[in-house]
Image (cartoon, rainbow, N blue to C red):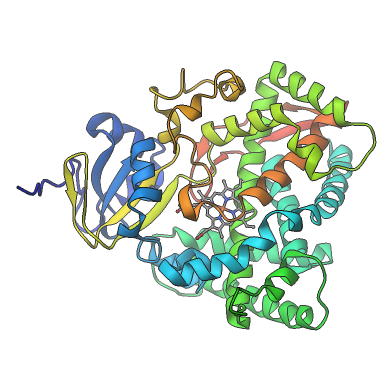
Length: 437
Ligand code: HEM
């Protein structure tokens, strides 16, 4: 007989459900996971929701049963309004076709062309930080990663233009999880829509210029992309995808870079080993994809930052076909969230999961290899983050330059408490004292 028992958990208050605790309580998922196990119900953003935790659940959602779930029906409504008709909100065949057109600009040979731009912009920031000596790193990384993304994705040339766009993106991002759905000029959501309109205006102008004068940056590759049948992205699609890539491509990287610098400052022995590795490569030659691929200890450190401080708390889906997991039934129409930070702390996979220990990813230990979908900071399966290679390369370039030439200390009297929404970050933005070696 079919089992129709829905997962354990609570729907919370009428109407509001558990939305406020979900948004404000860092341990929302952890507490319920301990109480109920790897699948439990709740009610957030106005919908019955099921949370799923752990590698087995992640594999179910991201790979083996992914046709039961829709991205478009999953992400809160604000995402649809603010991110438009982009890859993020597509499903099925349409998604596969568009993703195939975007992939070449984000992988393989194309990446080699971005190294120079990434290094040049990083070096400019290092000079600026050396002069400043004390600053909040989160805000600086945000500017740096935005400058990189906007130059490569939009061909933005001037600092002033990049700073204006960056501000607009911050306003847009703040609207994604705003609880008040009213689009009035003074609400967070209303301001986000106004920011989106200004971004669209800018991106449209740039795309028209680029169509006339193509270069080797990511935007030009997107404009030129053709599939086997000769289909390309329309101007409207190009605009939507460029806005999405800019949005998805800098807050997340900023988050991981900030936590990387927190952990390196907290663990001088890790900093030392990572620096020694860099010194083998620091012979004055420019960085190449090949050299970056040989920085194995830095890879381990970045994986440990991804595990302990994933930028994103989880992925939203809409259940479009009912399913059963661990004997519980989830009906069509529910919202689903697969949880990333809690999956990264499953003690059956990770020994002493709260400890920062890059050696857990050493060739001898490889804790994450015990089970697929144990490390999912970039999602997983066929819809794994499209920017994973771009982001990893960018973070390695920035980390390599930092380790080779600089040291830093975390300044006292600040809170490093984690804030998770919209992306993970230390509360006071990591204020540091920064010096050359
Ligand atoms: C440290 C940096 C990054 C992290 C941690 C990250 C994380 C993620 C995660 C977790 C997902 C899957 C969400 C889900 O399953 O619901 C995702 C998807 C995505 N990411 Fe990233 N990301 C990063 C950088 C980037 C960059 C640099 C870009 C583009 C330039 C990018 C573009 C995207 C896109 C377009 C998707 C949707 C893929 C699809 O629908 O097929 N991300 N990312």
